[in-house]
Image (tube, rainbow, N blue to C red):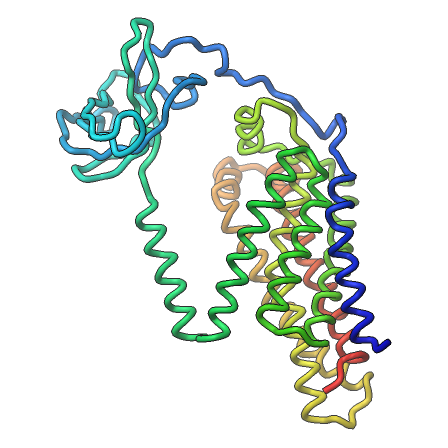
Length: 389
């Protein structure tokens, strides 16, 4: 049996094992799991319309879309504009019904948005002690702008990349499908987040690479390289999350537990986010290196494997520099508010590093960068020795 077929059978065998590996690993009750009681679940009534959504929470509340049809009154209060609005429901039980949102109050609420006639908003309704409907606006409707942005992206990809662009869009759809239908439901059901993310991430790259690059030895070696890199990245993530004593706790995590009403593996969720976050960069690095080796072999078919590896390795070093910087900037950009907070607070460098939020972002950045760095020599070595021109 040729090496090409052996690699393909190995990859297919791993895919068949993924469901068994994942389903066999359930999250046990440990120190990584923290169960929080929903602080809003016993609230029986709502007394004001201007309090935050969390304060007004009630399990039988209804959320629906509405449109601003008239601004009844507005005033400035502590440099914030408060408004009483007349709205018309666009969905749910209040569709085509008019109602009033009373946003003017002596209580100041941060992050109040100013609305105009024609704006579409998301409204939640509760009952007060007398059984009257109390409305409050919880956010804007952004679907139309999002759909337009996605349409422009797809159109641009198709115009520039044509057939390969279409395959890339299909791959993107598969990525979203696996994340939404496999990874997230698996984590919510209590299965091991690390195995779920590794298995789901490998499935994503498996389909993406074979759709965009075709079924050939180049694709086989790329998938194998990514699989090895993913496992090493996951192992390092487990080791250093324990050394750094990271819990994975954040405001988003606590809010998620409040919504679920049960425990969740925060630390596993953190490790899963690191693995999934590095997938796209790993894909780029591995495909580039394997393609580089292939082109070198085409240009100089008489070169030895060792010389081909050295030439492709030099290309990979430059690629690592740019990709690592890209990854760091991405994580720094997502944590810019936190970094500014500590800068303004005047904390010394050592205290900033020891802060849990900052340490978590450093952990994400460096584990992802290590995964990229490892993927380059692994993919280059495999391609140089086993890829034929």
